Image 1 (tube, rainbow, N blue to C red):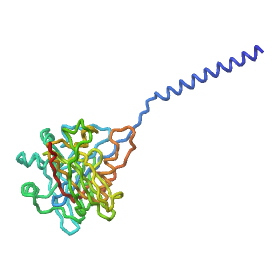
Image 2 (image 1 turned 90 degrees about the horizontal axis):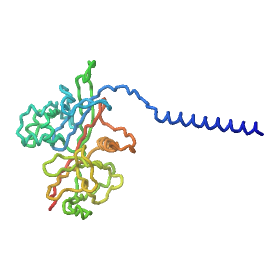
Image 3 (image 1 turned 135 degrees about the vertical axis):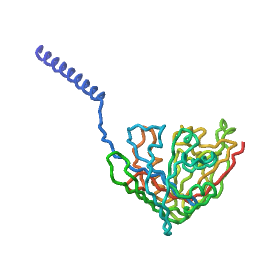
Image 4 (image 1 turned 180 degrees about the horizontal axis):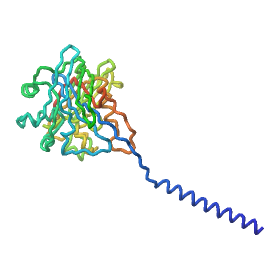
Length: 341
């Protein structure tokens, strides 16, 4: 009996030691630092291009950066691609060879400089920080910003092709890079009206109000839209909650919905106030009908989850061949409403 008890104790002791060993190994495994060697990806041409109804094409070209690389925010002008050959051709047979303009070289009056910055999606603070913004557009672009007309402007129900021959963009590259894209400016459907409604929260009702849009959706499928807003003289910004919509659930319907205030992409979202508009400001809505490829790009871009650890990775659907980004066509109408105090 003693030998049996001794044998049982040895087995128990062995099991205890073995269990402690397993736990120790498991804990060590949990705390192990895993190093992943991610090979560097080659730089690509990034296209931020648009052509809007009654406006010239505007193409910004830059170089892609490594995901874990560093970006010098004080010298963003170094990332623009200079010396490219850029051509836009319309389905009606007209075409234009674009010219590169850099804002700091134009010596524009302050008012016109702010107008150009607003069209490009920048603020006056960007220019003050010595950001040399460069874009490719029509040769008579200055005429457009002074008179509202130029030699080549977007038309509704017209397709456009973009052809880019970029110079080498990274060390060791010798050949030019051929980048293409296509887009369409559909028919501008627009909205029925805008209306002001009070903030539902009495805490903020004295300072903010809601702007509602009334829309009649066409009775045929395949309509896509994107909207941006601005208050006062600020640039147009997309709402942080998403700027594009399709018509899958609304074909042939009349409805109204509250607009979310557009904000800079680096803004911090405040659910209590940022879906509303400050009282005493004039709100301008940029309402654009777009094609399916433009919708897919912005929908995937805005669905990436930001910095949330609970979001799933999303592959951005680009309409640029041999590059990244988007060439977007906009059938745009503008609407303004004053938010009374």
